[in-house]
Image (cartoon, rainbow, N blue to C red; front, side, top):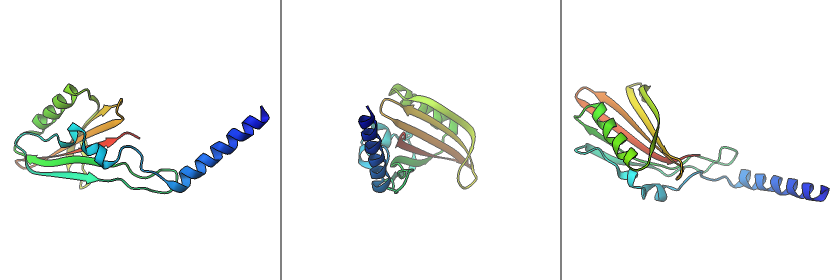
Length: 148
């Protein structure tokens, strides 16, 4: 019994050292995320549409790095509520569950934004849509990433 406990302690310690020294990118790689149907989900009639990919970052240590993220950004002349309704309907129809609705969020540049999030826990994925309005233009950005 004592020998087994000591062996498990050594194996656990060795495993922790390997994780700390090798680091890893948590979640799915960018190639896998980009194959998800929602990765290319674009609001109909959008202009200035761009694909945004962040491959993730390996970092040594306990946090393990950043997850890969893929998504779309675009603009439209439609209202924020129409853009959010489109994404809500499309994602719910494909098995996503809404987990967040923040109508009074802010972008990094300080613009007011409406942010919604959906999760697909079976696949360990999260999908975020942030929508802002500048004059007559509604801008949106989506992010698809693996849950940690």
